Image 1: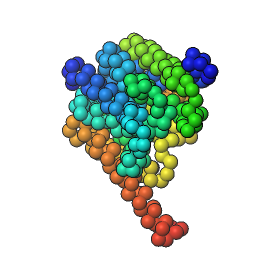
Image 2: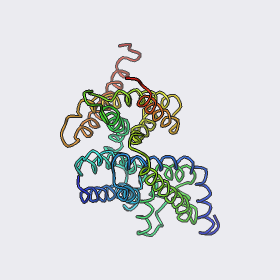
Image 3: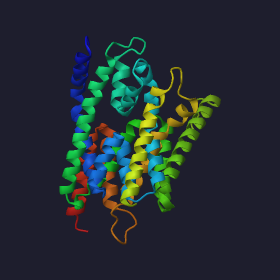
Image 4: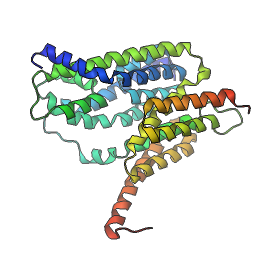
Length: 239
Length: 109
């Protein structure tokens, strides 16, 4: 990474091995938004404005069911909250970055580039031209993501609704949920939220989603406290 | 939701997303992640994802007269088994979609 130019291309090259993983996700996001009944232009605009796969899928599923705007925004906030942790972890790498560019870099921040940055570079010895490197990685990702969503949107308008491509939305979430269930408390949270979501479906304004999520978070925290108490007072209890 | 409202919602969603991402990057150095956030974030993914999955599986495209969509439940159960065993996104999606198509188009009942 001698010059900004070489750092940029270094970033582009480092991104290449990950492309096959993003393309199907983008295609599905595009096609599922059409299958869920979204306007093609709005689907594409959403992808450019948000640039966040899981949050896009959650938002379009709710928009298609005519959920109120406030619920959609709240859901997007909750799905994206983890990015605040990424933002904190990445901040030391951008200390010298000009202010306006910080906002651009924040917009381009994803799970993937967070992992790349924090595992490959030492935050106490930030290399020169890291900005150009970051721009190479995220710029490549942005272009590939938008192109695959656009192809998905176009293909989605050709695919008949009988194919139920919107079913891909819960399937994507299904493949994301199991890696998140690291402990027994996480399983308790997930099961409680799932059961609550089934019973809260009749709640007005799609509030069921929020109610179910809060139920899950509370049950997870309670399960954790309970297991800590149990382990502390009576180790190895079988009850 | 009318077209205008949907556009407005998407724009606000975008603003929320950029605000969350920018938070600590644009804050002055030294700002730390508050403890309440670390604590509450722990179970967010585990709770939100099932809350999103369950209604989409159970109650979409329900045949008139039925309470739940049994095809989607079976297909999702098979996909969940693959997700649990392999943690493979494409494998999970393929299993779920193919299972749903087979159930929808090739079941006699």
